[in-house]
Length: 412
Image (cartoon, rainbow, N blue to C red; front, side, top):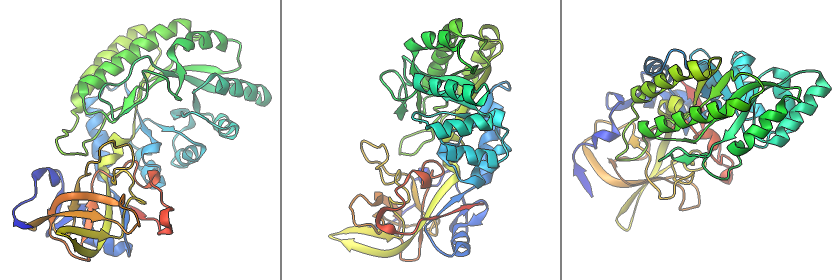
């Protein structure tokens, strides 16, 4: 059923529009699509990335070091842009390490976390001179053996699996059994044994959860992380030089969610930074963020190729889908499927709207980008745009599924 009305404000707040089209980086989405020559495509707006970092710098303590977690979006052009904005990079594979080094980040400002690092990955990290966040006692032993063979002292920080978790987090990373880090209760013994190993102890990495929109929950987890580090430092073989308290700052995806106020988080971190100057005087306090820095700067653009009405239900069939954007399909961590924010980028000023579902070309009912959303009436040739697509989009999707060509990635 068609209606004549305006779209809910939540669908267009914060977006730039010209001549009825969505603007990305100051350019009409139709012009970007035409210049690309084909769809689907991911478009990343560098101005939005720059503004987000500037907003954070204003809200957070000046002494705090801000790192970009490359796993959120490892596109080399995106990483290179962040290299001029942040204080360091966090990587989770040898491939990401290569991207980080190629972007010009100094090795001393790169850290490598993640369970199951291979010996080859560890060797590359040692050779590059970056800090390795040790996830297990086995990993520490491998590094020690490598150091003896190579005649070097790898820089290490211990990844701690904390005995608490980030409340209301979209993804919890602590508080119980986990493949990440060494259990907090084992850390004192590991620290006492480090003295006999040819490694250079730098500090701790404590990450309790991600994708959180509650400033109070984030502040509580950060305070618990600092308190845990203070207790563990008593058994450390040297003063703590680096304390990485992870990230956790989320962005709104679904109806009813409100953006996080970074000033509230910043106020809590200001108090913790002052505390650390007394309790951990040599420690550099680090927060690592991925999704929060790049998520809202990305747009997934696909084209309507068919419009179908099946038993009264409207389907906009596009050339995009879950093989390119698994998260938007609801198959990347959602328990109950919810719609990402979706707009018809070429009909932003249209008043005639309807309830429609946006689907892709794959032979599965899971290939769903929007389920029963209120959208402008669209036709073949129109461009569907999935917002909030800068993080865990392209790189977290099954691009080879059904052998369709991968989407292009464009930085504007």
